[in-house]
Image (tube, rainbow, N blue to C red; front, top):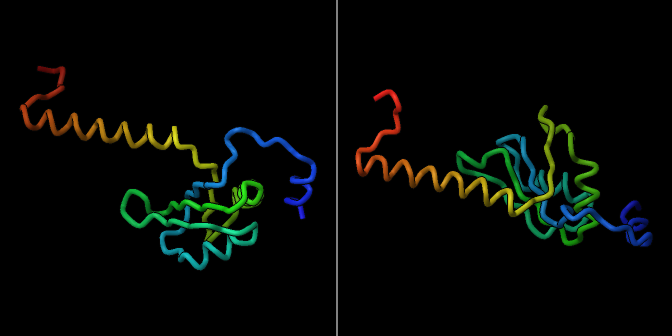
Length: 125
């Protein structure tokens, strides 16, 4: 298999490669069994988390046991068609995800403070 040749060649992987994949553009009604069928072809899976609430529907996290299996999955499943939707499969990057959530948290805090003190940011006044 391709993963065996990668290991024997002692290939250096790029720094963004890790065992955790972030999958976007999933059908909302996809089951965990279907996810295991699709992603399990490329190696042993430790965990799959499918987004269920309004903000996370259509996304999932897939955690592989081995980093080379994760790389193979990204290489083969990016652009894969599932129920007429093309998957976007990326390596999970903690720094980018936390920035996104921190920004939303700060915006929510600001809105609460504005409402509490009756402050408006309209420049027309």
